[in-house]
Length: 65
Image (cartoon, rainbow, N blue to C red; front, side, top):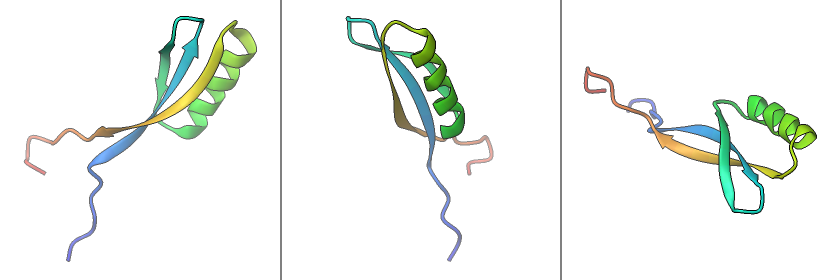
């Protein structure tokens, strides 16, 4: 049996709410980078902020993998 190959990758979205609902402010590839961005937004922005993890399908390569 072969190794398991992940079909998704995690993305971390920083979302802000300024009274009109949640909008994505930025997207990071790692949890650590997203946490740093979230801290920056919370220190400098007037709205409420949160971090949401999303799973995104990995695009197939031309070789058919």
